Length: 223
Image (cartoon, rainbow, N blue to C red; front, side, top):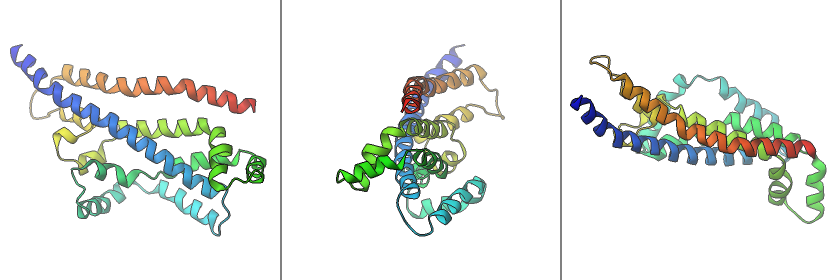
């Protein structure tokens, strides 16, 4: 019993740090990915440019490429940049999301173009159209995109396991898996407690933003 208590005391501070890493990285990546997706989706949905359909189709094609295929070359690129064991090495390769671009492009296409024209008649440019006509009408899709990528980081396992070797820099899912040792007796009570603690921040974030998501859908439908 004393040995278990000592094991819990030694494991808790490290796991708390790993849980904080996941919250911080999840918030950063969800925000960065939503912004890049918004700009790309706006360009593909509204700005006149040649080959727009081909670029969009090529981007969607990347969704069908298995992660296992791109992981080895991605690792070597990140290693050559000196970003292994660094949070930027975890985040930078994934701050652009084809799924996020698709989601927001579909939402932007549903916004009437008359709003763009009204903004331009008032002297607004592309940035003003995006800020005043597009963003307020796709707020629900923006929140959904943010939540989707936050949860994506929360269940991240393979890439952090590959690109992060420091225990104090690791994420929650890798930390929970590390508590299971097939060569020795696994303390499943500790594993279960860690899993419950890992769920709480993601659940609280979803519960908080769901209210704004529902309200945004209702407002958009009323318009």
